[in-house]
Image (cartoon, rainbow, N blue to C red):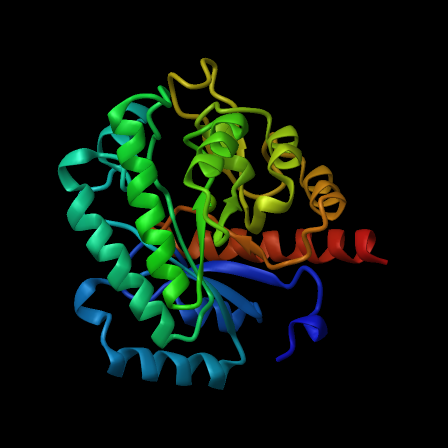
Length: 286
Ligand code: MG
């Protein structure tokens, strides 16, 4: 389908095949959600044959895949220091193997005919002159270049950095296919900044978004905030969508509800989120 003809703000949901936090395709189908971001399946499932059958299934169900999100063995979101130690391409001990795996995920994404790969990079070191910071810049450049060869953009998910730090980092990486997957709840959960002002600062760099909600922690940045159903947290969904409109973002609104241990509740709350976003969309786009 031609991009111009695609509807504005199509609803989406974060989905999984065999791994991760997302909903399964039966839920996507039941709730009649037209787009998904996919949590990258396990290495064993990233074969050409699986790609072909998945593409055929999406086509049969009329679902458009908008991004493939990488994740790694050994990552833990237990608390903020654990994220710092375990998540993304930042931890030095696993950096090389994870870079290789992300490249392989990018190759698999190409088989799915999807133009975007995304990930949580991890906590980027703050000292821009440190060798460790430069190493993270280099690894991100290498991944961007690999994705570019596959005709893809790379989206960094927000959360671990303030908007200022993320902009500075992206400027240092200096790659034309590097963009942001904006998650407003993560800004609250990690305590890295008020989401709406962060969104405005990131502006046109934002090329995909999550619709997720959260409550501020008592001591933001030291302890986790709490993820809650969409519309019940501190993001302010109407303000969020109005701000997306202001920055000219009309791509998918991808709902994320990270309670895979409670599948029934997850489905019910995603259905509520679909309703909320559908109503707001009607109100704001007309
Ligand atoms: Mg997210």
